[in-house]
Image 1 (spheres, helix red, strand yellow):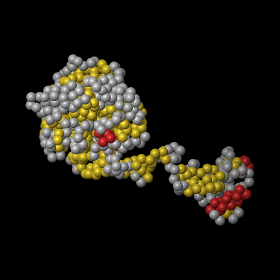
Image 2: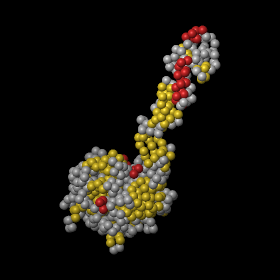
Image 3: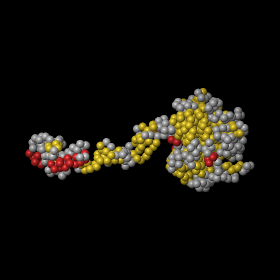
Image 4: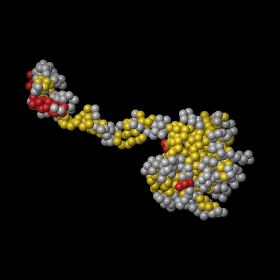
Length: 617
């Protein structure tokens, strides 16, 4: 006889012995007992009040202790569920470890071994509703209906493992600082006319003490691994992605066009386009660099900075500005909102000639949009101010293939910089000029663009700038100042995006050429930076913006040569970064400081912001 059959026979015998009871377990009122019985007694399933076991068939049933008689009160006798060995409830589903036991009237009518979990009163489910658990190195989140709602893999390349329902490790998202240090990056080639003999590259700086194991994946199953020691920097050259490097026929999506760089310790990554200034006897002529932000610091809303399409009369060269959008999640929908100057673009799949569009990207895909070409300077076609929104975080890099700055001053150079998401913009900026490489030129001239993100944004400059407007009326509207060499503080009524463009060497005869940098707001600055200055460039500098009270060191040496910005609490120092083997430099301060790094060479330059924390106030 099976366990279930024995239980049914036992309960059937109990039913035969119970008079006046419709079903086992239902309270029965013994009226006679309530009026005549003055002694403490318990009525068992067989009606006996002796307290002794009652025999039902050939089975003894213990007396219940649920009902007692006290003077002047009714005595209720509850028929307890028949002891079937496993405590089967009268009705419903109970769990015997991972077995769901269904009872009706105290009788087991079904038993089911659960592949997932058993939940009392419900039965077999895939998982415990609302729970988060580990399945190997996968984090499994359970929905309220008991089915698996999501599965997140803890990335082994980033040194993560699942514990207590979450990914644990130095690179776990909740453990990262939210600034420019991270473990998951997407280096992205941008369009440049430089010879392919030069190299696109990333410089990886490890600010920690533990070695960082690096893996870089690219198209055609390319995989590069390396180790960057604690407190060290390493340059890794990467093949050009020619679909991104060339302008070609217009705007496009390049599937899997971005590299993916992962680390098992937080690192800092800059990309160089290209890394060299010269490959004797060849000179690059067209170079720039960008800070790359880790995926955990990306956003879903941006404003673009680029530059007008450029037309060179002598050679009749026509070169556009661009922005490049990279996704980290499959099925990311990107929507384009052209600014007044960005409504003429080179069309492509999903991108209209008006600059409007909606494009879906998978992880590692790159959408590159070029401004429409023109045969005049200055061209009206300029992507600056264009809005980009997405339903998942993306990376945006803005720039230009190669252009004059200003448009009528030689020489042409590549521009690019990673753009902060709108949530990381600020209302207070210190805008400082770069140093001049010549003794006669203390600071270089540059152009400054200020892009509004909100209507009616007011602007206040200290010291005052005569040609500067007091208000930007609409989101995406921008003002350009310069060429100007003075340092100043900008206060705005709403967050703005601020960019600086190094001018061509032909402007004041100084060494260098156009380059682009984005200026983080004062409230986004941090206290320490680890930077990389390519040793190939003849001279590299750091411009440091600090409050009066700050004590700042570069490579352990105290910086003393600060200049005060009149009418403010801010000072600026421009420090020549001494040559070293790997180009690694450390900048530290007792308070938050802003740092940009740039290199100057004959007919070439690069410029990037050293870092910032977009989530910091």
